[in-house]
Length: 313
Image (cartoon, rainbow, N blue to C red; front, side, top):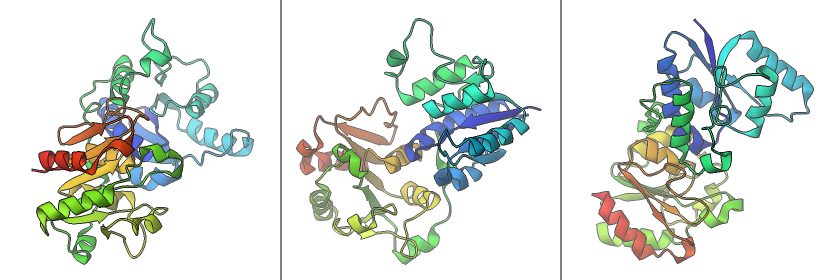
């Protein structure tokens, strides 16, 4: 029996994308202990993942915090890790490689860097979709990839029957009209107009709800929809997963909850501007589709409503 380490620090959407790869790693190392290194926002979530033995917290303090770095590396080295699967593929995880396995190749440290195809630059390789890059990385590391291209985030759900009872949720459409303030180009500005069209078409057939994050509760008041909270606080990730999975439809900007919806098998639609493509982030699934435009300000509520009607039934 060996000890295996997976690195996945975040973010929320990236974790939903990576859960198929994590499952494949676990199933290919079914006699080994699987540890995962992650950050505080996702530590408790990963504790619920059935494909992991245990989770290690990385506070991601400064690389110049030598005391913290020493204790983190000592904790990992004590496990006598035989192989690392770096699914973060960041400058920080590359830095950890130099400390833990300074002379390693893909046999001991699997990353997009160590498994880069011959005669291909990283810039060219990064043009592939997220899931295609994971698949190549794992297959080069001799992992049979049954789930990598089809992530299933359902393990993240937990019972929300009390919340659904409190808000009388049966058939409902959930909206995610928010985005980070520094990524305003991801924000579609016509959600209230869309809500009016949905209500006009379907009357009271569906409740229209929003589930804001901790920093979005104030902004949720500007949306003409029922705001779903748990005792006045934002839902945690597992509660949010269940709310999304049980919904009739999801409409979202390109945010973490949109990626959750895609990999929970929810029906829905996500709205993309020019910041990236739906292909590159692997968000389109059987039930979950995308609208791609150059500028979200030019995407009309009528156009989105047409696609909602097409995909809702």
